[in-house]
Length: 69
Image 1 (tube, rainbow, N blue to C red):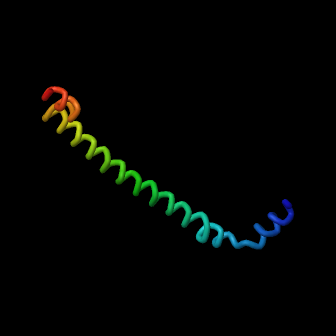
Image 2: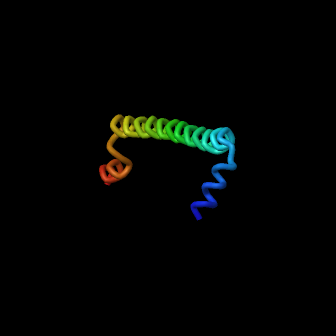
Image 3: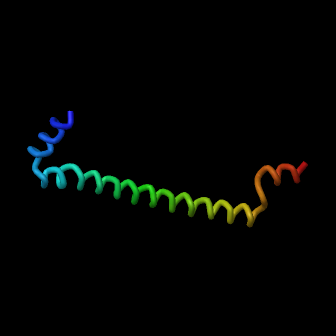
C-alpha cells in the first residue's frame, strides 16, 4: 500500500499539488471563516439591540403579562 502511495506522489508534480489542492482548500477555509465571522457579528449586534430594548421597556413580555393580572 505504501509503495502505491509513494509512486503516486513521485509522479504527481509539486506545483499541481500546491496550486490545485492545497491553495483552493486553504482559500475556501478562509472564506468560510470570514463568512461565519460576519454572521456572528450580525447576531451579536442583534442580541445587543434586543437586550437594550428589554432593559428600556421592561424585563420581558412574560413579566408585563404578569403585572397586568
